[in-house]
Image 1 (cartoon, rainbow, N blue to C red):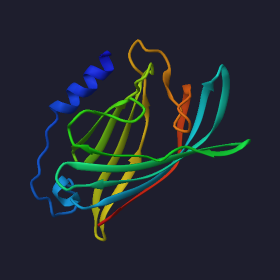
Image 2 (image 1 turned 90 degrees about the horizontal axis):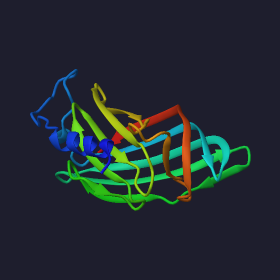
Image 3 (image 1 turned 120 degrees about the vertical axis):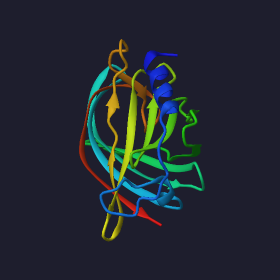
Length: 192
């Protein structure tokens, strides 16, 4: 197990949080408040990568939803479309049900864990199958006069000593090396 994988899983299992009620604005949103909620998100990232020895670039359009509960269950559905000057190509929709704080593997063989801490639902993913590096998806929740709101982010992380980020393409699983990944916009909403 790599040092990033060990550190990620160790940190994930070592985190704790409070589930005390937090009814006022400015107080941290709790997991109890999110029970039964569905989070819908969309994001666009500009990406440069190497595939088959050639440098390519375009945009990755990500669309998904996360259902919270019952209890520690997290059910996800996420799809990606790659858009470039040559057209667009959609990948398969990935879905699954996970348990908070319990390490798991996705269909691509990546190690992942979902956590809830300080009002944010976080998925930590370490690329498997000969990959290197990982990714942190964060849904940060806040409370407003009109209900719950969220913000979405999904940066990559390099693995110490692992070089560039390597993973299977979200579109077809072919190995790629990520050279740059820049957010170009995102939206996030919570429904109950």
